[in-house]
Length: 142
Length: 142
DNA sequence: TCTTCAAACGCGACACTGTCGCGTTAGTAA
DNA sequence: TTACTAACGCGACAGTGTCGCGTTTGAAGA
Ligand SMILES: [Zn+2]
Ligand SMILES: [Zn+2]
Ligand SMILES: [Zn+2]
Ligand SMILES: [Zn+2]
Image (tube, rainbow over all chains, first blue to last red):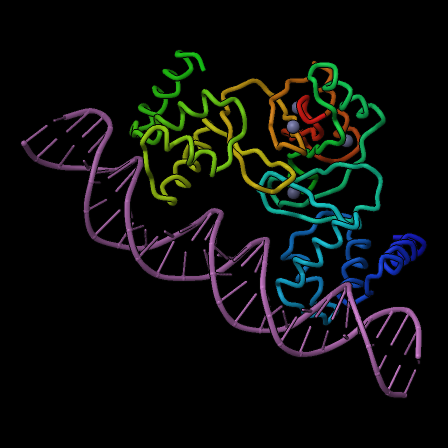
């Protein structure tokens, strides 16, 4: 994450009258560095490295807050477990290895933007966004 | 669901040495009729209409069993709640109304099959399947 | 620096979810 | 009718996510 992005996020938080607490700063830092969806459990471990210890309820509340501010977004994969990732990014999708469970980010070519239109013509439905995840075997597991 | 499909499913179960219990028959019937992903909660309500009452653990075990037999499949949407739908169907996707939460099935044109190939050329990853869900407003909520 | 205020926090309680072991029931075939 | 075992009910359990409430603390102003 570029410093300008970080500064922008912090500025918007201050304008909104929100505090820059250690937990909040650490989470933004973590999400900015880890460019992949993280489980709550993984977040906990990454927080350990920062010496920050928070109650379960506090972490949940912070994630709800960060999502409401569009700083992070939730990702749903096949296992039904909720994951979170940095939202200040280009539109992208995920490759999930069904063997080692590794998750990679992937950006498709411009062709994909035909997706939403492909549906609108068939149904009386106004598409706002979509979720597209690929499953298979990664290079190491293939 | 056509009668031949039902007969086929029941035959394979018998061959596998599995019993045709009231719960099992009712669930197959329900999934065959409701062509959309169902929450566990919704399944419970639909079962009420059949006068069948089962313990929580039994229902979970039956869903695991039906999924292992490829009779049903799980669907992951944005809210992270697990849903189940009939698996003996053509490849399709979903339209989820973010307002009234209604879920419709949708089959895209042949164009979509370029999706998996679009990724394989960029990454050292062998795609086996994908999950594609659209979100927006349905006709009634638009 | 000191005061003030609300955002954020810790804590405990709670309902819900999903799983497991074990003794019992019931579908199926002999 | 008998026998076998898949399926079941039940209770217990750990894990998950939420809530209320009293306390702490970041940030701004005196
Ligand atoms: Zn896309
Ligand atoms: Zn792998
Ligand atoms: Zn598809
Ligand atoms: Zn709607």
